[in-house]
View 1 (cartoon, rainbow over the protein chains, first blue to last red):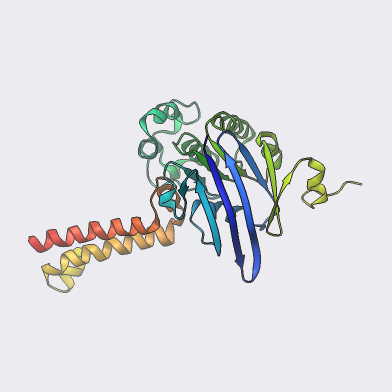
View 2 (tube, rainbow over the protein chains, first blue to last red):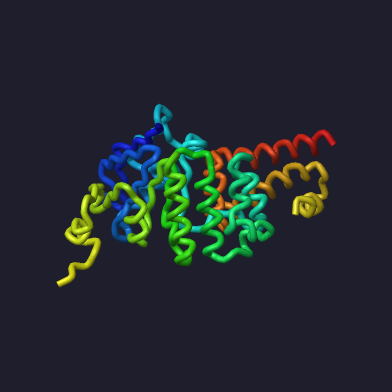
Length: 220
Length: 70
């Protein structure tokens, strides 16, 4: 079993503290759902963990390996950004061949959603098609931990269901931290829900807590 | 473009430097300005931005040496 250990993350923008001494841990076999209102720092937290965003203070490690930059993440952490990241003008088949090791590649190439797209370039794909290729690339990678920033954004219901199923399947061997405003899907697949507000993380045990914390509107 | 620069300066020896400069400019315009998010593909492969810039510079320097020898 591997553990992603995140501690002492502090980040502020223009003297406004976004993340205050944040602690988070995730083990392989676990799915953590990170939710919070717009602009609370969810994406920033994932970027800091992955090493693409600087923080005033941070400590990230996977087992005994310290993570400082993206080059330390190889085989340990993969990150799905909010916006599309497939290289422009490159065919999906080539993207997959370059990205994945042979043993994982075959599974993805025969996938029912990916197979019809192999000869297309990333620019010829719709937003939803790009998203499914990106998500499956990361899920089939050899990384122990996957950070997913809004994986359900711009995706049709049938693909949302399929993505949820895939995340649940790979989470047997990997740890997944997922954040999305489609909270229903996040609440359905995550084993643990953490809520980010005012720079602090709180573990959510019951849905009613989210109403009390101002994530849902109170119904009279 | 590199050939154009060498033609403007009427000096074939400048071709290697031109190729290197054009490569760095292309890297800058494509990855830093136009398709900034493409970096995440390479980050997920285990590269850092520093390594990617270094690889562009290295290929440019190899070109420079080849042109110097020729």
